[in-house]
Image (cartoon, rainbow, N blue to C red; front, side, top):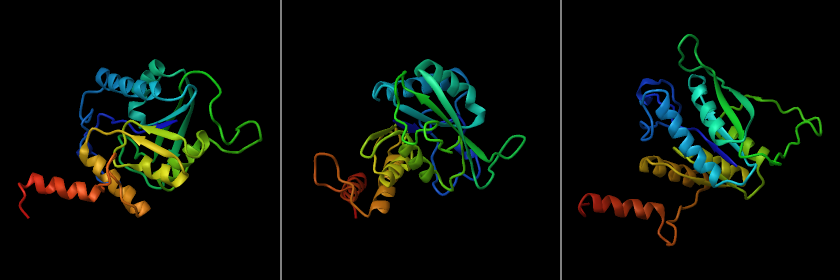
Length: 227
């Protein structure tokens, strides 16, 4: 499965109340004009996620209501079917145009037709899970989505990993997250959050060098060896 929150063409500096994790302007699409370019970005990224995912896997995509047209257009081009639309009702309202916004949309696409993973058997055993969610935090929400549509040890893909929320949710739910981000500071933040959660050292692939050792070495190189 895949779960991700693509950039939304809104300059982050113009948004108030982003939460505890401060984010930089997106290297992909922040502040770009709405319309064609944003749809193209979504299509390119989601198509890659679909290409590298199992057939009939479920792909969750976060989006605000202001860019609903763009994500629906991209989804029509990339995926086989829109399975559902989840409304995440938040505990507090943020900024808005006419009304203050207190919800987030989570579109649920199916990556080509087929029998997708559904661990709660909606409609088969009279489960009461609905498409209105009220989780207190996004890590818990994403972890629940993973439990719904994947098995333990499955790979979950996030093509816009940002500060690593999907990684934390995967750790919490026993999944493996593969994430991508163009901003190296986002990647560093994601690694640090994982280390704080797990109390373990991230290790550079193919070596025994820890993340903190790599950071220290690069800092020394950047400053010309000065201490």
